Image (cartoon, rainbow, N blue to C red; front, top):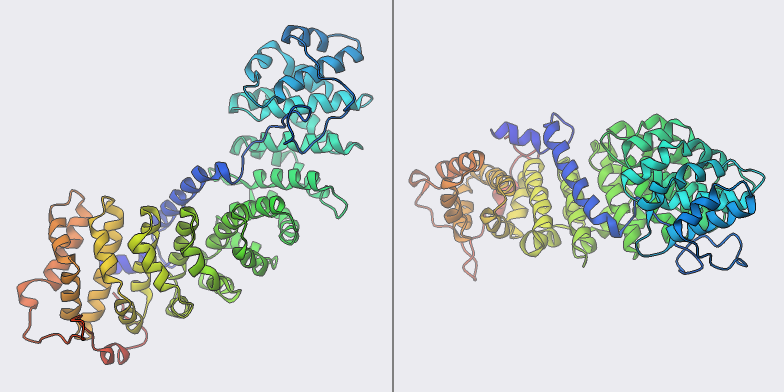
Length: 519
């Protein structure tokens, strides 16, 4: 049991890969729930004549708003007169572009989708192409069924062809539509990737690219890197890495945010993928963005850095050496719960490394705010802080474990034994076992046991004897039998300070072997 716990506390070194994968998937699910405010999978182009929020402008501002009934729209689109076609298609686009309750399903049932797809090929009438492309963009921004209605009519290759248009408004609208298709899920994402759209999107990013087109292109690129089940073929997306590395230096929060989201998806994978991203040289700038005041940039930047430190020790060192630890105290005290949780998760991956890395966490002054998270933060953040502490106890030297006890870790750890989440309780039990085991080998086990008892930990351990989860029951039983049974009580009176708090013998920890223990 102890050996198993030891192994699981180290990342990628014989660690239970299913356990590691489960935690990372759970993290991704939590992030996805919070992502609605941070980055949209699909975006609708609201009518610029009615709303001031559209990045694109009307192709012809002199046209008055068209008011036609839907049946008239379809009839006009089916006309052989291109003037009538354009007027009807514009009316179709306007209905689909209104801010509230656009009748997407109704327009699909009328049959406008195949007609719009056909209009995409009218190279002699770019205004018609533009209106049709805008209408399809908004249809594809809806549900998966609505997006599929666009895909099923063969829109993708025609939209791809529009990326070569000489009119930038058409190019941008085509990028937008393709981004919505790619954002629908792994299946449509792969369809877009296999159509070789990625190199065409990358070619659109030049020093002369307008900000509006750049924003939409980077967002579309991020959708091509998105989704995990399955993840995109890395061979098809790695070509974007040099461009993403350059975009990290762009001075626009929307471009930065979507670039960081793309990197957060690409770093969520094997060590080989992580290394490919490190090799672009982007780590120093990515770490620099952890200081960003823009929450939309900070969130994906933190997630990207956190993913990199799930890699091997060398990859983690690259993040540490770039100065990532310098801002972690601030992030652990952030007013956004999600940032605190992500920061604690990142620290848990660093403390899962070697004792030198743990020492750098200590030297950066991170442990005090981390213990504060463990004690007072929301439960999701507490759970990540619990992992960080237990990983610390498993990979740290005996001196580092002694330091942890001195910093007051036992009280918040014991408090979490009352958690309703059995997995968190199990993690804390492992951490307490590691601390007690180390202390016992130094002759300080009884003192630590008394400290745990004074924190209310023994009462909690005894209550866990009736816990419904077998792992929790077994771990709490082992702790009580090994460290709190009558046979463990000695005659020595623990030394206390002026406040009556028990003081460990620091000499015992300082004289201990520097390599820690092999539990």
